Length: 147
Image 1 (cartoon, helix red, strand yellow):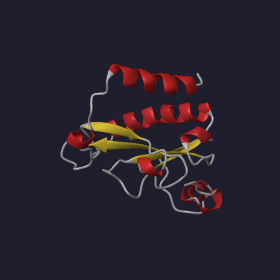
Image 2 (cartoon, one colour):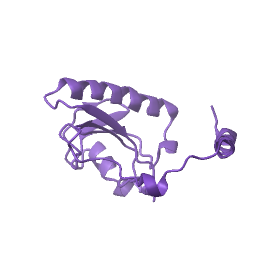
Image 3 (cartoon, one colour):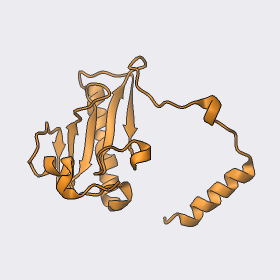
């Protein structure tokens, strides 16, 4: 699903048409706490340029998002929201859990007992593929990789 800029809540926030509690802002990104946090201190890093998915952003913006995520991670660790770990999370597409179709990057504090996590049935879904299958997957992705 692709969200049009006119209906995008993050674009409205960036344009000053929706409330936000700004943590950081520059010419490329806006950082603010999400209204649906995993734990207190859960931040979103949102590029000011509307792009539904990662592939719609210039490499410079993506690298900037990661640079700011590192700084936000440090700030969370120094804040009163002490944590046992920090997750970085990107949901790129509806099947990956993306709910707002304006690229955004999550940085959130974690605790062993916070009850949050990925649900995965290791018995049902886990296999050890043969090397030939791994080679085939690697070759397919390599053929499409543009570095």
